[in-house]
Image: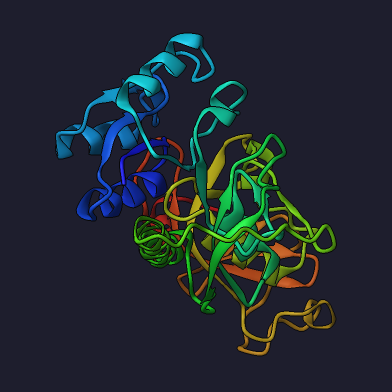
Length: 314
């Protein structure tokens, strides 16, 4: 089928790669403009633009995908379907109705509509997630679904490990839908149920900060959910923040065990404070402690907790 692809993120770039391998390689890719990224705020092209250029696919980066000129551009490409994945901006009329639009969304809709479904599923402790293929409508990820596949969330999954499995799953799911459509079996869409709908809000700066008032297990999940692309952090006494790349719940940590120390014999710091103990870096919570195994000091590089403790007095 003749397709146009709209996407921006690393996840979308992976879906684009699988689509390009199929018999439905896009005639055109639309993505967002270049913008400052990373600690140095260097202006870089979005991952989808970089992938499209590497694949030799024509790519355009309009300031607004809803500009009339974009509709004219898509008309000239004569697509049979537009494929959307993590584009990062609302698609409105007339583009919304000009061609069939399939959206690849990494969750089991209606759970986790919105910008950060993978992160929110891990933070919430969901046992599974998945990928849904839906028809794009004006509402936020509320369109009818034509295909879905489930994926278990393993106890040690990070965003990186889970996203890699989901983009492989999503790519195969999408290509399967397009193959059947080309073979004369158009997608059969089923409206989403309103019951059980949840929203995966974009990860904000406050979401990165580990709140000691939250359950310790939730903080550990938050570290995994934000690794490696965003990063969790804890506030330091001097007003700076310490990045946290890997952490675990201290064995036996609980509210009842604070006075006597944890079950593994380590004393635990007060909630919101850091403590070094036997070469291990502990962060106090309201119900025990989180052991920080890999951290990143301000302006520095990721390092093991023991190395951090050798250079920093707590």
